[in-house]
Image (tube, rainbow, N blue to C red; front, side, top):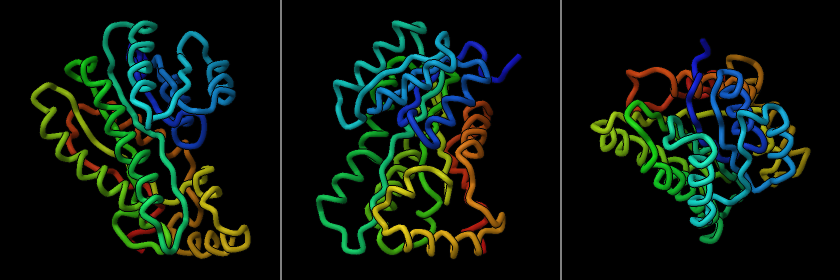
Length: 246
């Protein structure tokens, strides 16, 4: 028997990177997955992997009507309740002197988008359900040019811990996985010049105890474990190749 047989999951940001990897791992473990993203073409490619198990839903986490439609379409397709929610949609933009607008953009997606995703799912979460937020290990340090990204994820981490206490009495577990430097499109899309990005990446790899960037699949397998283990509440699990302790 697979770990997620009979489970229904909602995953946002599922068209690429970590979100896509989580969707693929969940499907392999028997889950039925509602995959949510703005990228229709990428969602259709994901859907083709397992049409019986994947529901592609196109939308934006900053749009409450889209989130409402996500939950309604999911329960209409897969049944009246949800077992796992992974709000994986996120953005990161490099800006040494970040504007107010850039903070607003990051918080709209990374913080409010994640929180609102779960809010719309809550009426359908039953006892035994699991929420796994995607935060970042960078909240444990400081990084020039990434203040909006780190601040938005730090706020999400605080929310996760409070929500874990609030929902425990309902039998719903809330935790987070905090990736570090993972080989996904979010980092190549930071907005750094290619030569600067390459130089920075080389310096980072030299500090990693693993001596390489992590993969989206590494993160997905950790999310699977956190979503599956019953005795975990309000914890953040860092997966960063040893960057923060070296």
